[in-house]
Length: 265
Image (cartoon, rainbow, N blue to C red; front, side, top):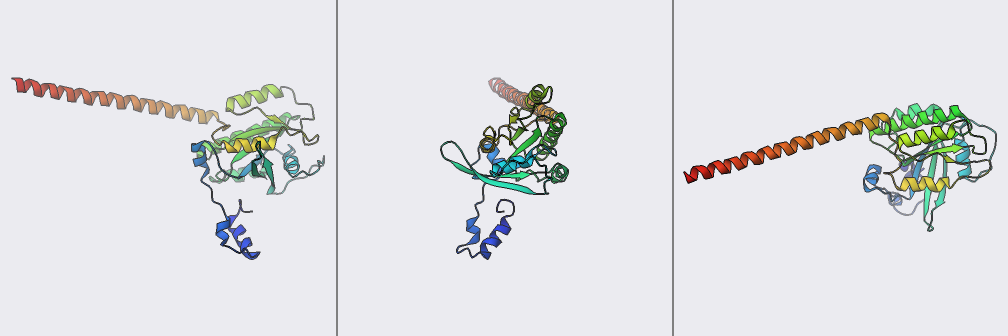
């Protein structure tokens, strides 16, 4: 509640009789784009958006994070679904991770807001590893989110999760996933099985990625072309600046030469 709605959290502190200044109970951290510049985050609470098509395994991932028993029954998620727990990292360091499930039908509405990724530390894209259609839709969502991030400047680290690893993968799954992850510059999909309780340290890996916000940021073709264009422009401007500087130095040297020549005459 404090992460999503700080004002409401302060009101509740007052309601339950918090003895001190309620505002002092809220820790305000630096903006995420500054974390990216510093190439590390000192946050203790990370917010992760969980994207993916229907029946991909998003809810199972959230339930497993809360240590709830696995269920084969498919239940359509509500508009807002959160799972919050503490993740212990190597060395005994503890971080709080907030997983927020984004329903497939709600992605367009989310991305219609330019500030939608401003509150996100990391995004995870879940797909059913046995279903090629699920994989294709997950990659479409990844491209949509990455494009939105490039356009708005709120770029976030991204991970791909291959759920239902207990089932047989669809044909060409390895080749397709390798191609997509290589082209976008992020890690290969992380296989997990909620049914068998095999999670490949996924929650630690999510926190670790969030702690280094300058890494694992996907790059689209349009974004790559835009960066190459800007590099070309900057290089051209540098050459122009150097040429102008050489011209000025040449003119100055000529004036000195001309002055000395006139003086000697």
